[in-house]
Length: 223
Image 1 (cartoon, rainbow, N blue to C red):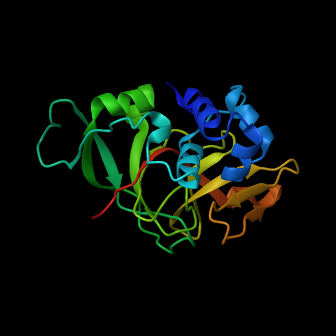
Image 2: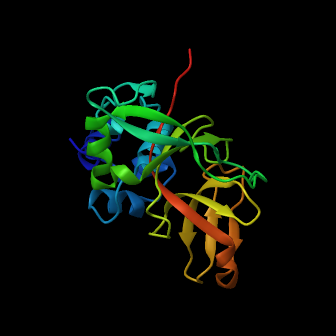
């Protein structure tokens, strides 16, 4: 089953088929639920994580608890059989205030991940994926402090509402949800309601640089 199928099953089994009650439980509008179910809007990784958190479901439930395989810090000249190598960058993507760090972005180390998992998730974009560590709490519950973010660096432009890694001439990298408003203004949103959106006028949007689109995240659970 895909995410839409699992969402339909969830609503049918836990909310007696009521989209209204489901919307109330996850604090979304009924119209947004309808859009997901009818394919008008995709159920992205962030939305899936929000549903799992709101309903106390296991991480990955919306994907059928799909196994992502193991992950290794590269310690050999070539990736292990069945694995593909992705660069982990030397800067965190800060979920909070930007860090004043003017040093260049460059690979810190190489990470080996399951090739089968990566190709299913990213397809032809696999060579454009870079890894960032998330730092801070402003994107909770979608992204947690310490999450590993998979970022498509070829999507260095606004491609609709979504989560992006951004930077500015102040320095540092931030992970935020971006939305262009009907007024043409850019809203920089923290999913954590403790933090207010930052609104950038249309004339000043050149101060914001989009460095990539967040396409997946891994949460590491420490014992």
